[in-house]
Image (cartoon, rainbow, N blue to C red; front, side, top):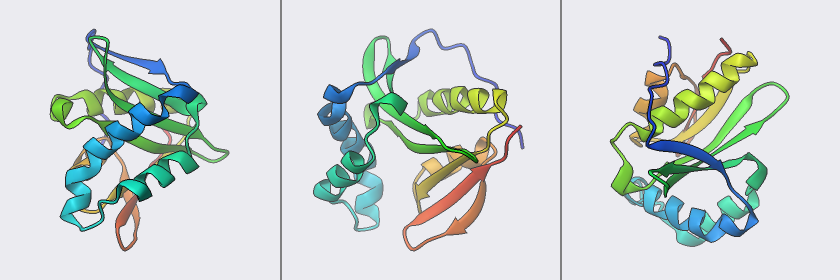
Length: 154
C-alpha cells in the first residue's frame, strides 16, 4: 500500500517551534489525547507533562497551522537508521479534516527523498492507528498500551 500523495492545502502550514512553546504544545497534547487515554484509563496530565518535557526538542518540532492558527504539532527526530515520528497531535476541534494526513504526507515525502524508514508508536485503540496504516506503516510489535509501526524507506 502506498501513501497518498500530499494534497494542495494552502490553508495549512508547518512552522518551527521554539523553547517558549512548551506550555501551548502541552495543552494541545492533553486536549488531543484526553479521549483516547481516558478510554484506556491512562489519562494523567502530570505523566503527559513529564513525557513531553523529557523529549522536547524544539529543533525537531513544527507547529501545524491552519489559516495561521495553531491546531497541532509534529515532532520528527532523525536517527541513524530511521526517522522517529515522536509526536503528531491535532486539536480535537481540527480532527477529521485531513490535517493529520496532510502532515504525515509531508513527513513521508521528506523521508522518501532521503530513503529513510519512519517509526511511530501509537496508543492501542487510538484512531491514529488507521491513519498510520493508510499511509503504509506496518505493525512491528505490540506492547501493553502501545502499537509499534514502521514504514519502510521508499
